[in-house]
Length: 440
Ligand code: NAD
Image (cartoon, protein in one colour):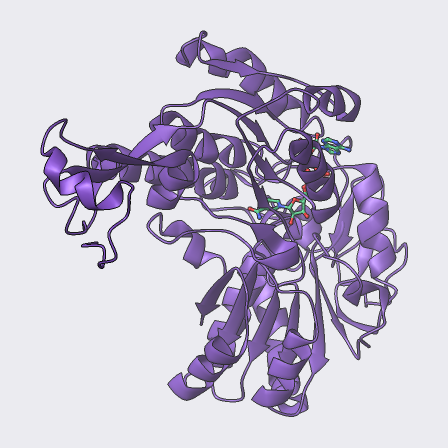
């Protein structure tokens, strides 16, 4: 995927470390029995919630953040006391091998196993009875997993995807918005479940946003993003063909070039295979201050950071989660139009709003529904381990991160420990019943 070094550190390593610290710092507190209020007849007894492990948990991960999306749920599952079977994505082969060969040496072999499996083997794996299944991936496979779980009445968490709207109001700092949206959209070449999928804004804002986005893209990836060590590639040929087909929507305002050989979608010299954007001159690659410029590997293909305008609701790019470096902009007349547009669609994993006016942010927050919500930035909400992370409706079921992970992987077992004596207190509930009120 040519995932840039910083993006690996941020999305694969740092988020795992945050989760680990949050868990180690709080686990002894989270796992304590939770005592609850009692009635008159149970006042002298103990009533509490014990956090019990489910048993054997199956964790299935996707390819876009192949380390983080296995290790973060794994931390919660182990913290809650479960045995774990981990199934990495077969698409990112190196990470799959790293997990299968490396992880077992750090884990108790009696309590954990890594299964390197493709679709066929995973289908057979899912025939087994697990005590909990935690799945991260697409809504269509989420349905398959939930159907398999239903056979054994196994509880599931489904961390899915979808189209995350990003409303940009007229009152905002356009340069800041452009940088934050471009970072969220083009991070990992757009293959991020929390990426802003499309922008909604007024026609006037679009006029200001386009040059600001162009500037942000050039600032981030240089005049030729294809040569930038900080811009990734589409994971595989099948995914590249799918993303490339979405370019046939609206009008290409920025980028649009693709190169199937390098799985590149974006701006700069390259074979145009679909987009209508202008090619820019072949200036030398911008070198990352942290890392020397790397030569693109021909085995992992490129596409450029692309912005589409004049997009219609029925264009291909609006029919599915983009999961690639393409940002469509659709114009709306007002914040209420944006709210109506969002509410007419499936509830997203996250909803982004950019506005310097609190009343605009609150209006969108109050009148919409989504897994998460983030104002005036992208992606950053998921860096706070104490905020539960998950979708709603088509974007997922359940949540995790920090305490929410521990609770997800724990069965809340109700316990009442009564004293063996004081039988006179029980007399009113035994037949023959007296015609008086129960002292409950
Ligand atoms: P995917 O659903 O194709 O695959 C996910 C996992 O399911 C893989 O391990 C794969 O081997 C397995 N799988 C695939 N087909 C299967 C089948 N028929 N039966 C059983 N198992 C099967 O998803 P993907 O392409 O790896 O990842 C991209 C999707 O994941 C996007 O929709 C994205 O939004 C979503 N995602 C969500 C989150 C989140 O936290 N909500 C995070 C990352 C990615």
